[in-house]
Length: 200
Image (tube, rainbow, N blue to C red; front, side, top):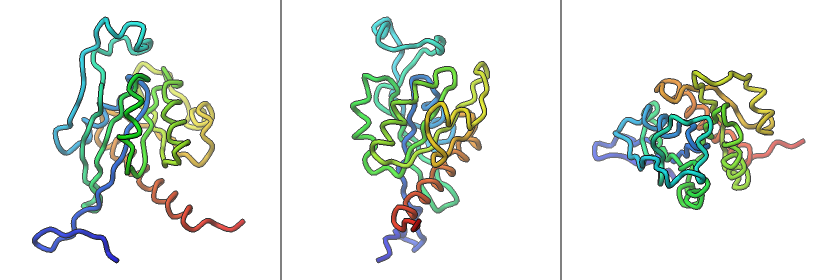
């Protein structure tokens, strides 16, 4: 049965796909969603206050003044075929309880990594591995961060060769678009190979 949807003029509507943008505190998730969204993104940012001292680790991102407390939401259409709905997850541990709800029905996830605080993306990597959710790692290239080869990041995160690792600039729309295309292709490949496993 064809599940395609059509508008009133009989034109085929794009397929809706839910994508998660995850990663550590200050990795650039809100920036990525804002850079690529076709619509004004929904943001649930609050100003960091003294109440977060000793709770939120800001080492390496001391200049950060706001934080996501629920989620970011944006939308982008790719080649008139896919409508990607982007859900940015909060990075701090105290908000991880929300991830189960946000991740329901998602095709896959982008784990945004900051090489200044690489260990901060381990919880997201572990979460998606446990759930069997297809994901890629996108290394956000901060200007003041030391640059590493992609295979070094892959090895440091103990990913293995089946999880793509790419470079990105979360401020740049085209860079973010390439990240999302890579994720969709990876998730579709994972779906096909799990449905039709290759015999040894």
